[in-house]
Every structure is written in C-alpha cells, then in structure tokens.
Image (cartoon, rainbow, N blue to C red; front, top):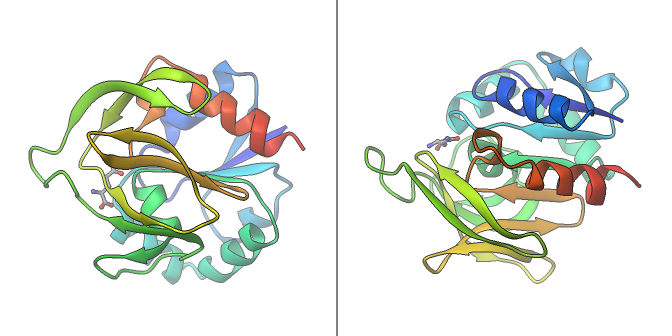
Length: 188
Ligand code: GLN
C-alpha cells in the first residue's frame, strides 16, 4: 500500500503522519515525474487552492493528474483539495474539474471561518471536524453520495474513486476518514 501526497503547498505533512500511524506508506509528489510512481491512491491536502492550482498548471501536472484520476486512481481531497476536484466553482481558478459537485470557496467567510465541531460521517458515526476557511458543496450530481452535513451544508461526499471533505481530518486525533479512504477506495 503506497499513497502519494501532493506536496506543492499546504498541510501535506499532517496527512503523511496520519498514514504513518495507520501503517500505510506514503511519498510526496512535488513534480510531474513523481506522478509516475506506483501508487494505490493520492491525497490533495488543504492549503490555498488558487496557489496549488497555479503550481499544478505551471509544473504541467494538471493533465496527467486528470487522466490518472479519470482512469480510476483513488483520490482524497481535503478543503483546498476538494476545491481542486470540483467540477464547478462559484469563482473560477485552475483546477481539475472532475467531480460532479459545485463548491463555494471560503464559504464560512475569510477571517472568522475557522471552527471545530462533531458531526456524522455516513457509516462512521460522529467524528471530529476542524474547518479552516473552508469551502462547502452547494450542489451535487446524481452519482454523488453525501457523507456529512453541518448546519444544512454538505461538507463531505464521494463519487466513484473520489472522496472529499471540507474539513481537515488530518488535524484531529481521529483516524477514521483516512482509514475509510484506504480501506474502501485504495484496497481493491
Ligand atoms: N480557503 C482556502 C482556499 O480557498 C482553503 C482553506 C484550506 O484548505 N484550509 O483554497
């Protein structure tokens, strides 16, 4: 089991730590050539989606990543990572556009948008959720399963090989969402 973590910017180290605690190997993806390593899944961390999208474009990684995910590579996007996967953004910036969701960036406001709560994740029960200037999903397509909602807003969902959360499971003590990704998506 080897998981690649997009490490251009943002909270990639925290995901590596989670995977290490779950005894899953990981490596950092910093350029196009790293995308050709063997991997059973890939994680897009939180950070700043406009910066990450621009770096992916400048490093010529957008198309390779897009085709790998379209071919079935399991992907888990947290926060900015979710924005990169969104099929539709309420405010355009370079992204992959693969998942049938519409996402609103900084949906809780730019300054005061950070908070902690505990809510249901479908099938896992209540889990801790840390939000940092997070987006939420305003629309989902027919093939998308909603996994978490907080105060009426969709904050976690999956579609085929893609899993996204508005919040940061890597910044909480829980391993549940990473375990879910590894077991349900990557171990096939
Ligand atoms: N606000 C950031 C963005 O729009 C996302 C924040 C995060 O990933 N913690 O890209």
